[in-house]
Image (cartoon, rainbow, N blue to C red; front, side, top):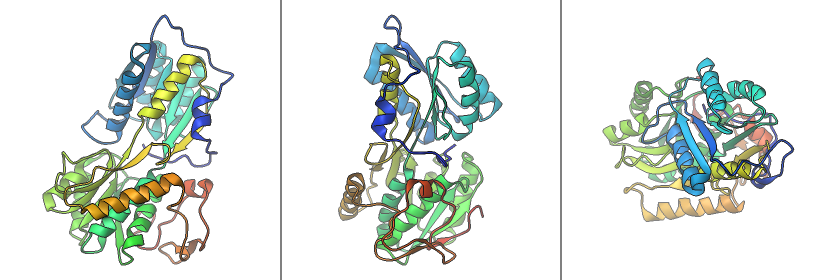
Length: 366
């Protein structure tokens, strides 16, 4: 559900949100704009879908009676998704958000039959006149979380429970490792691939296996809170992803990497209301407010918190780029130079990432 935006050009945040299109009509002021959201899992207290649900609530709060929002949860990718998306369009929803990569093709198919409806394919990469795409630079938050993990580990071993070996996940693993080793050069990261996005028992088992391999801090790129719960149970440390998970792991959580959709969703709804909506691509990060690191756990020293927040400001200001080789070449874990000293990966290279950085134990997809 989190696959990256490989192979597409990245447009500026403002351009994607505010340019006047040739395919929009102002929304009638007589009735609220009906907006639909399709969720790939049930709405839980934390996780991927929770953040999109918070985004939906932000739209309601910002636009009030101008909009009427609804959601359908636990919709599998594929034929079921197409049916649900089509039903929403037939029911008069004029803006539909589909936040899962596997919803991309069903969204495009339905969009062809409903040219008057605007669609937002979140984590997709294919656009159409009435289909826009958006995603967040999760890797920026991962780098910052790696700094916290590097300061907090005592064994110098971090575990990483990963869904699928797609570029977005590889970006996160590599950025986390680079951040960790920027403050702790002896640190290593051990990866377990699940080939699942949401399977709490498998997520938990993978976390327990990593703890048994001497990992005392863990990160994950899956959809549930199972890894956090496992860390809490074992007395280990963990990086929350998607949401603040201190309710699940009050002692384990050191920091949370969260994505914030409310601002983007609200601006896109406003654009439909005033007739300025246009298809485009957005890839926003810390600077745009789409990625945030914070929600520190009580075990994290103030100095570590201040260091992480300072580096977050550096990323927002453009002073720090996770995939820039400052002091030396960056090599992958097979010894090949992937970023030469002084160079920085461009968006196209980041979006096509297919390697694991030095310090990661594991192989792509294994």
